[in-house]
Image (cartoon, rainbow, N blue to C red; front, side, top):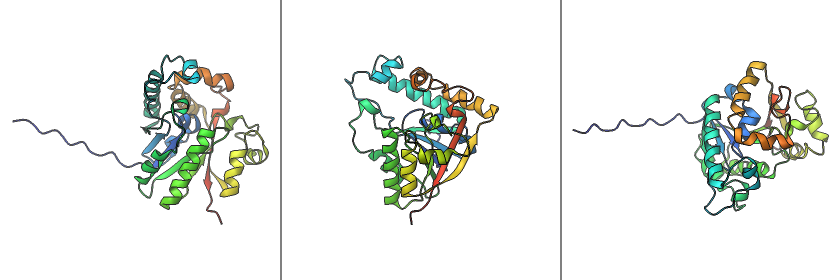
Length: 252
């Protein structure tokens, strides 16, 4: 007699979902806070889809050392799985191909994913500092939760980008964002539409920093090109050492 297979138990639904535009954004921005968030935590990479056949390797992926778009995608999936495992989070990749491999269309897989979440799941979305693709993820998520009637999400500072603000990680962070022309537009946009208040602010201890550094280093393919524009990205006192999350206020 053939023994029937043991049924696979469904995983617990996530208590917290972090929308990460690309593989690495959630970990760069939130690895210190993730262990303190309500668990289980799921990191959802929006631009996580495989490129279609025939695409030339992008400038970015070539700079990372990859010879093909497909090779880059498989390697980055594996990097993300390792980083999330270190942080105790579950990785999910949506099907939109990254930047140069995509069609620039609507990020409708966000709609499908968010529609399947329970009403108590807490959602975190990126601020969108200086990154149009991050802002596109943010705005699509805000649209969808408005249609669904879900509670407003939390908003996290995208690192290392927001971390270049001169006041970053100090009590003057919000005042700095409110007036800075380089790093403040996304903050001012959301603050004018909803109002923002600090929900989490963290200056990582040495122990927390060591754990975050280990998770960030899982994305080894990305570190060399990141250093071109963010040379201090892994410095002990660099932009990743502080993390910040805001709550959106209901518009009046």
